[in-house]
Each structure stands twice: as C-alpha cells, then as structure tokens.
Image (cartoon, rainbow, N blue to C red; front, side):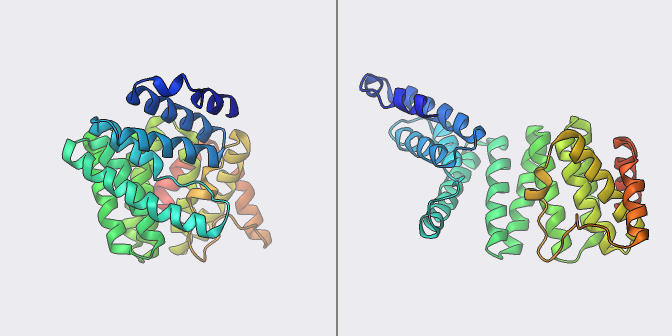
Length: 272
C-alpha cells in the first residue's frame, strides 16, 4: 500500500530502467487491487501505462493498457465517467495490439471486458460479437477461466434477449467449465444463472431448490461473486421465499450436496 508507493517515489527508483519501473508499478497495482484499494490501483496502473508507452515492448504495453482500463470507483461521478471512457479506449487499444500479436489470451480477456462495457451502453449486438470473439480466443488459448466467464456473460445476454434455449446451453457449458476447474466460487455464480433460466421456464420448484443450494454453498464457502456478477435488470434471483411451498423447496435445496445441486442445475434447470 502506502509503503510500496513511498518506495516507488524514491529518487533512486527514477534512475532505474523504464521497463523495470513500469513492471514495479504493475506489480504494485496488482497488490493494491487485491487489497481493494481502488484509487491506489488506478494510480499505479496509470503510471505503469505512462512508462510502458516510453518503451518498445508492445506485449507489455497491451498489458498496461488492459490493466489501466479497469477504472476503480472514483471520487465523484464526473471523474468516474471520464475514467470509464478512458478505460474503454485503453482496452480497445490493447485489443488491437493483442490481435496484431496473435495473443489469444489477451484477445479473450480484452474482448470480454469490452463486451461488458458495450452491454452497459445498451449495445447488445456489439457486446455479443465481442463475447463470441472472447469465447473462441479463450478456447484457442486453453484459458478455461476466461472461457467460463465469457460463456456466463453470453448466457446472461441470451436471457435478456429472450433466447432461453441458447441461455441454457451457454450457462450449462460455463457451469461445466467451472466444475472441471474445481472453482467453487464459479459454480456458485452459475447456480444463480440457472435459477434465472429455471424461473423463466416456469420450473418453480427447481428454481427455489437452486436458490437454497446456492445459499448453503455461499454460506459454507464465504464466496459471493454471484451477487456482483449475476445482475439481471428487473430480476432478483435470490429473493426470500414467502409461501410455505417456496420455503419447503428452499430448504430441500439447502439439503442438497454440491454435486446434487450441480446435477439439478445441469439436468433440470438447464436441460431440454
């Protein structure tokens, strides 16, 4: 945090090679990110980008551009808006470089990030094109986590455009990706997606059992990426059960093992 920033600000550091200083700022930004220090993350990544532009390593420049595109919560709305615009431009520039370099991992993450931003602007078709590119690139790179994220986001988009069969297919594939990777937080997130599909298909008992299963898994593991990553406009997948029947289904879901919950999601919520 502050100690790292103080070290990087020392006069002796400024005499180091540009690339070394840029990589130090990048590392410091990563530490700040995982410590949830939003403004420090932004400042370290901004300095890393400034330094990367002074060098001739295009791969590192693309990385610095991509990192700087994740604008943290700003101090006010005006600053946040300007950072978001600059961030989108930076990631777009990064994607161009990744394409030039044939870097599939870079293409996968940059196109996914731009897809999220396009969706937030209401550019649905543009978002879906970018998600298709992300999925294909992640496949080519063997990047299972990025593929899982892109398929999850594509499934959400399918729900919002009303294509429930496509949503079920993409969400099921994403779920299988997270299961194969042994990532419980990802599985928890995809159970929420499955709730939305089951409810939209009128499979109420299944949806409430999955709500209960997700509630139990989230409580047991302390993972909750689902809340931030499974937002559907006008839909609250994890609302509290009200009727006696809903509460019974919910408790039946809480009694399921993780494997049983996965099979319920895969075969009943997301099956044909």
